[in-house]
Amino acid sequence: MAADAPTRPSPTVTDDSAVFWDAAAEGRLVAQRCADCGRLRHPPRPMCPACSSLEVEVVELSGMGTLYSYAILHHPQHPAFDYPVIGVLVDLDEGVRLMSNLTSASKDDVHIGMRVQAHFASTADGAMIPVFRPREDS
Ligand code: ZN
Figure 1 (cartoon, rainbow, N blue to C red):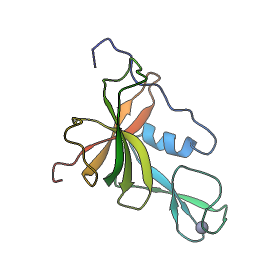
Figure 2: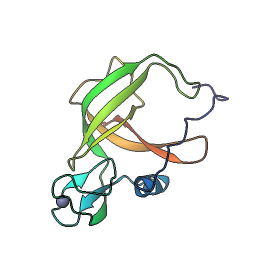
Figure 3: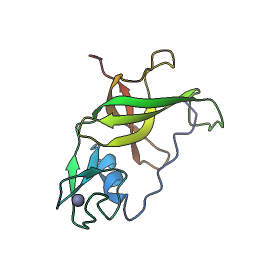
Figure 4: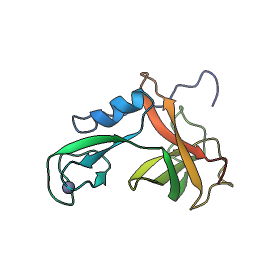
């Protein structure tokens, strides 16, 4: 990305997702966990999909995961990104799936099953967004 290019857009924060984005602003990756049955869930939402409980805890995740799938995105283009963008679905080691971008990798290196590690990218408004890069040991 050019030095004068705008940074990526900020996320839309809702009452349900604020816990996720507040943690991201501190460089932490979190997920909700049902306080009754223990199931992790993402994206954040008020009710457990397994047992319908409204009791929730927030747990910190390792940020380590495995690429479940990806897409090489060419269009439409936003000036904050270098293209192609690698859009990814990551299965985190704790058992939740996250949609994000793969950075520090070329489209020729990406493959399903590769090990990735979360890090954080800043946005135009100073928010932080979790993105992923290949793990050195993958
Ligand atoms: Zn539950």
